[in-house]
Image (cartoon, rainbow, N blue to C red; front, side, top):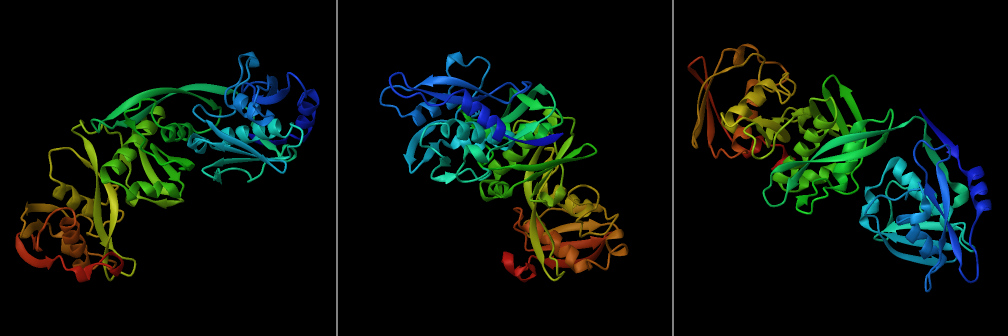
Length: 425
């Protein structure tokens, strides 16, 4: 259960306990986070200002790395966040932080903002705080300029839980996926998927493991439907598709394997801002590049919305090393990417009786259902265009597709560029 507690009274109390002490041995009061099960979320500690150090710089130093006398208080900032510079102008302190700060989200980000504003605004002459990375505020931050009087701290009722999660990362040297166990402190009632994704975004503790997910990525929500977990990401997820196919696939497998290993889900679906990716195909556990049962990203061609053209859509299909990709692609168009027939342009019940791959004209003999069960939505010519373009654009440099039904010649279809939607020509 969530409730929002204004810190105005708490701020006044804390400011009354201590602030800036002028003169020799000057000190500042630094506000840090208490343990999750404490009655009050914030505590304070006195920090001495060193020579040639402003009170604001001393405060930020202690906020990121609390002094040894801070007892059970902890930094509100994540490990690895560094202070690049602290500048003051007209009562506003601008704190420039390292990129690691962008990995902080949700409650953790609120804690960092709250403690920093409470600390710096308790120093004489400071009324506002800016937290910047490369000159820009955190995209999920509450406001550009923080002040102690405007803090609203999000407190979550419920006890804290210690969980161990298993994360999958990709080695830069071998390209294979390896596991890394990591302990996380989560609050009861929060989805474990959010913690898994946050840790994957932070990256591996090993220097030779590639960071697979882009900084700034956010998991908007995670929804379970039986054994399948649907992960809805922010727009940054589309950056994966703009890179190398191998990196995209490794990132998808990294996410799916990590979620499956750390929760009770058996498969993962991917969405961006509510829109399904990869035609809604679920991704099951995969052992990585050295596993005989693996996955690959393919481009299948489907009817456009107007029904006049074909257009590409990415999907992820299992590869077991026993069948060629052509057989998998044909099955995908018959059964749909998720195996239920959804998005299938070929009629229900269609079976492949015989196929002869060729770099000239690929021959496929279908069962009678190809013509008997054709739907009004997709005429037979459109269904065959989807098939020939799917094979052609996935490495089969064929000029045409020879189609038979129950051994009788039926039709020859060419990979004609005019069939393709204008946006993809």
